[in-house]
Image (cartoon, rainbow, N blue to C red; front, top):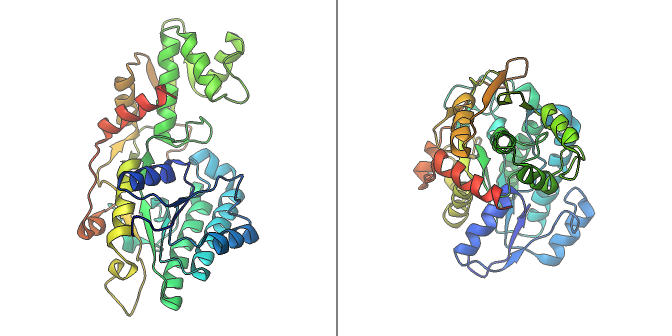
Length: 360
């Protein structure tokens, strides 16, 4: 990429897209094309076609997607498969029609089978059944990988796919119903700490920024306590108890979003589709894992966040709630061989994102 290349970042205000935009700006790129959802609905085929024909981007980062945690994925199954397929179909196809030099499609490691050998290698794709709770989302992302591969093979495009592990960082989704486990734990423990300290100013500020089921900071203490308890933040006579879904035993890998962005920009600057496979007769599994290769149990993650925030209450692991896959660890050796490795530890990342959250 040249410093003056026209770069379109789809999803520039989300966790992934905002980190990529920040990284590109820091490296001296300056010619960006961005659109909010209100300005351009990527599910609208005609609108996307018009946008590409008018703007003619040189490079595309496809970071726009409908995302969420276990509850959202399992509840809104039709929305997750439909919206993600429409977004990626429109953007990838129009990138081909409008001669985009290189596109990066961002997926997720949930594409791998539920009982995938650990750590998960790219070659494990489509070798067994998927985790049921996020199957529609995973199938959409697998389709995106295969779409990029197929366009490259048939039309000679240069579309590459990356599969980041669980991400966290600035601009994450802290909605207690729809967020992933790490930001959800940060917000729950933050609110639990405020409740423990009887600091209603912090609680009100948090709920004013992000109301929970319509309850904001101006609601009565009774209503606030009721909605907090509904989401697992319960005040007792002597302490505050926080509910964590599942046994706490599942192992998860987490990657700082700005590390992920650095990997994406590195690959866009230095690697092409032809660098992503070795067997030219059977081109498949060309996607690249982006991860740390290091995992932590949900129980230890919750304890770490609890310690960083300074919460003294108790954690209750509700085993009636689903655990999901017991272990999900990526094998990032393909990425390492291409020349990139992560820098930020989980402890450093949580400190940084919590400081960011409290300043919002």
